[in-house]
Amino acid sequence: MNNKSLIGEFFQFLKVRRAWWLLPIIIMLLLVGVLIIFGQSSALSSIIYALF
Image 1 (cartoon, rainbow, N blue to C red):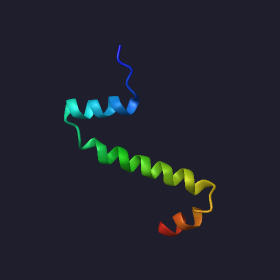
Image 2: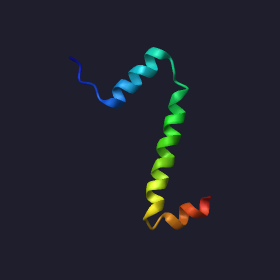
Image 3: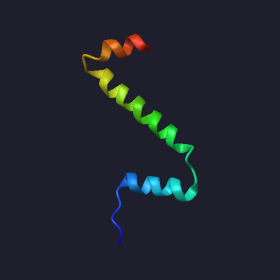
């Protein structure tokens, strides 16, 4: 039985299915998620709010 991480299985899926167009979408979703988390309760919130 192969114990692969979630990220490893995701990259294997992208490689087998040739779905590399999904990678930028996933990266942007992760970046937006990080901005939301830091924007809620951080000293960076004023900088993030100024960007938008």
